[in-house]
Structures are given as C-alpha cells and as structure tokens.
Amino acid sequence: MKKALLLASLIGPAIAMAQNNNAPSSYDPHDIKITGYLQTQFQKAQSPGITSFSGGDFSKNSDNRFMIRRGRLKIDRVDTYSSIVFQLDATQDGVQLMDAFIQLRHPDQKGLSLTAGLFNRPFGYSIVYSSGYRDFPERARVFQTLMPRERDLGGMVSYHPGGKIKFLNLDLALVNGSGHSAKDYDSKKDLIGNLAFKFDSLADKKLHVGFGGSFYKGSVRNDTKTYYTALTNGYTAHTSDDNLGKAIGRNYYGANLQVELDNTFGRSSFKTEYVAGDQPGVAGGTDIKGPYASRSFTTQPVTDLYQRKFNGYYLWFTQEIAKTGVTALLAYDVYDPNTKASGMTIGMPDNFTADGDVKFSTLGYGLAYQISNRLKLTVYNEHVTNEKTSLKNFSDDLKDNVFTTRLLYRW
Image 1 (cartoon, rainbow, N blue to C red):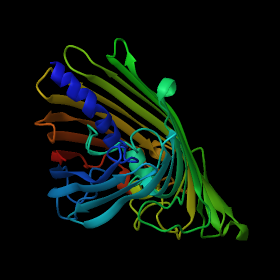
Image 2 (image 1 turned 180 degrees about the horizontal axis):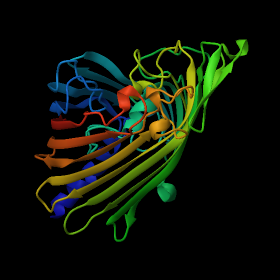
Image 3 (image 1 turned 60 degrees about the vertical axis):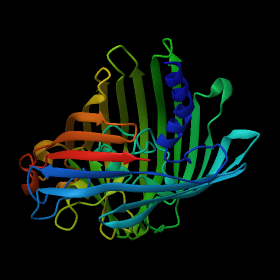
C-alpha cells in the first residue's frame, strides 16, 4: 500500500502536466521526450450523411464508419530557461500540426512563463484539457463551434505560482483569431484571459474543487456593405459604404466549476462550464450547413455577417464503480446560437432568421473501462435534439444521434 501511494505521489504531477495541452510532459530538465496517444473507433449514426460534432460529418451514403479520431505524437524538450513543444496529429485524413510553441521561464521565477507559437487558447477548462485524458469522447458543441481545433497562433503570458498561492492560475494571450491552421486574414488581434483556482486538499484531501472565469475580446472583419444584428425574433440590417471592412465584435464571457469527491464507492466527478456573448456568423443554408453558420472563421467570410447573441453550456458527471476500472458517464450540453429567436419564429418571412439560428442540445451516456494505465475502452451514445422551427430543414427533429465505441492507447 505504501509503495502504491509513493508511486501515485511521483507520477501525479506528471499526469497533471500531461493533462494541460499548453505544457511539456514535465518541467524537469530533460532532452527529447516523446509521448502521445492513439484513438481508434467505430461509429454508427442514426441516418446517413448527417452533420455531426462527434468526429466530423458522415459521408453522404454512410451511416457507420471506422476511423482514427486522433493520433497524437508529442515531442518536447526542457532546459533551465526554456522548453519547446511540437505535436502532430495523424489520422486517415493526413498529418496536421497541432502544437508548436516555445516557452521561456526563469529559474528564480518558475511560476511566470512566456509562450509563443501555436497553442491552445487559454479559455475556460475544457479547451486546454487534453483529449487523451478527458472522460468524454468530444468537447461540447458550443466550444467546437466557437473555437474549432482549440488552437491559435500568438503569444501568451502565464502565472502559475507555487507555495501558498499554488491554487492560482492566470493566463493572458494575444492571438490572430483565425484558428490553428490559417494565417490571419486581417490586421486585428484577439485578446483572451483566464483566471482559475484549484484546491486539492479539502475534507481530508478527499474533496477537489476548481473554478474560474474567462473572457475573449475580438472581432471579425465584414467584407460587404451590409451586416445584421439580432433583435427579438429577428434581425435588423445595417447597410452603408462604411460597413465594408468594419470590425464586428466577437466577445465571450465564461465561467466553469469542477468538483471531485473520493468516496468508498469510487471517485465522483461533476464538471460544468457556461459561456455567452456575441458571435459573428453567416446566415447558413445551401452553401454552409446551419450548425456551421455560427462557427468561427479561418478565412475571410465573403457574405454578410450576422452578429448573434449566443449562450451554451455543458454538464459532465462521472462515477467510478468501486474498483472495477469501470466509470459511468453522463453528459448534457446545449448550444443556442441566437438567444433572441426560438422555435417557430425562426424561418418566418422577413425576419432574416435562417438555419444558423437553430438551438441544439445533446444528451450523452456510456461507460469507460480502464483496462490498464495505458489502455481504455469507451462506449458512448449521443442523443442530439434540435428545436423545431418554420424552416424546411428544421421542421422536425433531425435523425442525427451517434453511437461510438473507442479504444485509446496512451504512451
């Protein structure tokens, strides 16, 4: 028992570091270290060709597929004053760069660091948390919409002190705003801030609590003479020569909470995150499917922008089942791209609402079996519901549920 506790105390900090995508595998000075993970899975959709946030859309004539969801290879090196992280993602779609950043730190001020390159946007909890350790197969729809692929190019100052205030984490980043695989398409930059607190020594070290708040302050360039702002049950159009090149606000505010309790039955965990604000998008329809109409842009949008008031959240609950290695999973998330309009008012004549204004919710449930410290099997079902509207494409609930069986190996 003592050996097990000693082992846990030694590997615990390394695991915690690995769970944060914006960090090397360890800050102990070391030469090249290679880590990573592979996720291979089979999925069954409710109908062929559906739009899905569970690993991407299904092909037109397919309702099931085998796929490599993620194949990550992470290389890092740490010395006294600096560290470098370089991570690739290899799947059936090819090889993509995921992380490439340099961190500068002074040995006398280890809590203070400067990061430059391609890194995860420091917003909230789930964006930075590694998919190799997350209990649930995917991040919530709202975060996949606002921050697809999670990364961006820029610079970040972080303050993660130790000692009596080791519970504090502070990050401030300046980024392009166009995402991880694109060059910036305008001259403006976006500002991201995150303040987090984590307490691991409550109730005789059985209770672990974390919480925090974040903001995102940015904009999207309008490439036409018209843009729209949301009103109750519709939009109003703004047309002027001055609107060509106008910066339309992209502003988010978020809060998050994590609670974990070690008990005789097994660890119980509850995590939630809420985000709201302004999101510029497009109308949605034939060229861009509705669920993607409010997605953040990687290139200059060529059609009129629609500035929407949005909100979204997720609720994640997990329960370890004694010492079986099995964990029960239960999740619920909501994304409402336009809180000013709902139901049958969407799609009514002359109010300019369209496919991009439809609200979605997802109920997920399943089991995860930790076969070994490196190997995990997950079976998970997602029941996706959209609101019924006056739009032809969303007059009823779409048949877009997805069942996933995933095997993960981490090294």
